[in-house]
Length: 108
Image (cartoon, rainbow, N blue to C red):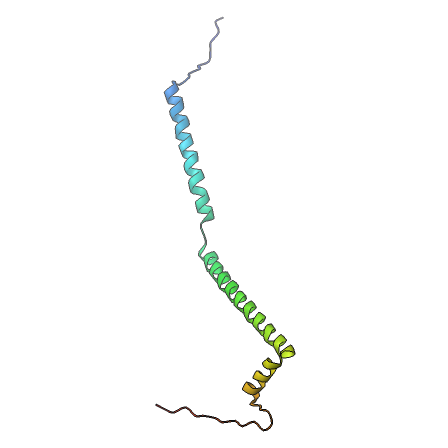
């Protein structure tokens, strides 16, 4: 009996490397394209991010306002001139024997 060898066709080197190059290009395109599709921002996510930025800005403004109000409260507790200025301005208080002259601006 004669041995029959299986058909062991080996493509030429250029064909093998061409196939490898084509597969590499396919993989590179998939690696470059697919993540951008998965990472594309959803319009809702963009809107929520904008709202988050607005809220962070407002929180910073409120923090600064609170710090200013804390400083005013501390001044009203300890600083005599701050107490006097506030009493004169908001409560229209004056010292005894003090004369108050109110000037009305002229209408133009």
